[in-house]
Image (cartoon, rainbow, N blue to C red):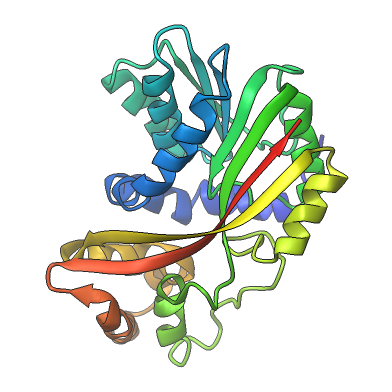
Length: 282
């Protein structure tokens, strides 16, 4: 099936600047998001009697590998992501951890990928399902890949307003970068699933049943020494910073760094991630 413009935009983004930034920051991000990984592994482990789990938007594969470790020999944990650099890293890390026999990583658009029908006991995602240009089509495709009574479990961000840490850099930089793209409500992206009613409607329209959408607030941390890397490489700011002249880039980084002062506590950065914990049944 031919991709439309929005899908092409996401493919370009995650195979370009954003994808390479996530690869470079892989260890930092995996550590920061570890609490979410544990929640998803716990949710999926008891719902996978044959050990077949699909991890959507798997990135560099941390959740996929954690599932493979938890489910043990004989399991088959498949990660899918549109980003070739992240999938390459996921495969390399699986080999390093001697998990290659239990894992498989597919570089593809999960909205359109021809998964094996009824091939998975569980479908999970850590912040990977908000980027589809047609969310109903995507979740219908995932439903087709799920066995009867399979469990869907994913974590997605609530609103930008509830996640000031996640938008601190771009808000601080906005006066210096008037042409920086502004996030659009309900558009594919980090906060595309901010509205509970929209999430429920997507699940209903795509054939999932017994939906549960619960507020989830998680305390996250990263080392203060990693903050400059985080704010300058990731998110909307990270996508434009390399395009600026040195003077403007320095001004933007200084403004963005100051915006994180409320979150810095000694050698540690702390913030509350405001999310949804979503589950449903096939």
